[in-house]
Length: 369
Image 1 (cartoon, rainbow, N blue to C red):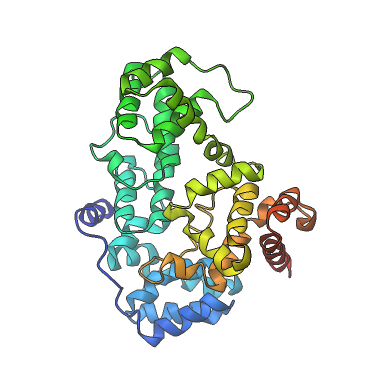
Image 2 (cartoon, rainbow, N blue to C red; image 1 turned 45 degrees about the vertical axis):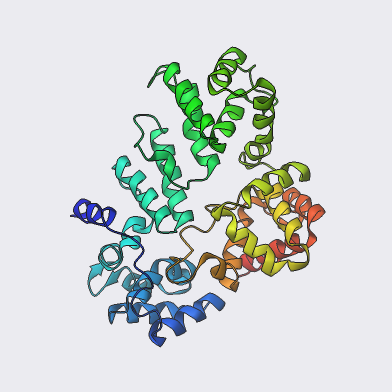
């Protein structure tokens, strides 16, 4: 039954506008309250509204449950997993096509369907959730095997697609090197940034311990694409900051600044742009660089905790106390047992003290009884 429903969802537009009940006070009041404070009654009220037929309240339950479920006793939490006797996941599938595509982040076992769900979520504007499924598909499949004809037509971030291209360059099992090289040539001719990231990673330009690159193979790829050697070297070097940041180890400010300049155009970077604009408006640019230097790209840190954009747009959500809290608290696990003494926080403070203070404050609140 789930497979039939998914086929119907993928075959129909997934962006039908605001859900029913979004202006109903039964949804609006508890949802707005949950965006501001830890009030478990907001979750209970949303559940009641969902059982009364309010679609917006139903769609809000997964995210608001992520925020507030732990504040309720177990007897109350048990009630939240069903809507009028129906499992929450099934109720969501039936209520909204985008919610059905996301499926509360469950990847399922059909990897072809998973990729199509990711593409449909991109089309619906749910970029962070789409990238989450897209990266799951890459991690589960390696990106090997035949690619759909429209594979490169969707707005997946270049650093993610680069993993598919780089995997094909290093593959010795699924396809002959000539096929991988031909694909890279095609992507270079299309001026795809993912191709340059893949080639730089394949060459090991971001690592001091990388083996020597296959210069003959690279030269043949560039020649086939009609790109001069010196230009190719420059284009690969330009992507090195991205590759270094995506290792999720602290980087120097110059590397972070260069990577941030590339990331700023990505929808997946909007949560950080909003966080810095609202939390550190006097030093917003430095705030972004400091975050990237210490903690890497912000994508995926709030995927399950962010409501669907039909309930609240990404920019608006991360301007709320809840959105800022979720993004800042996602960093606390990287600070160690004593956040104030964390080397990551010290490196962050050297670039932007405002962000460092905000991270430390949230870490202290998260650790409080």
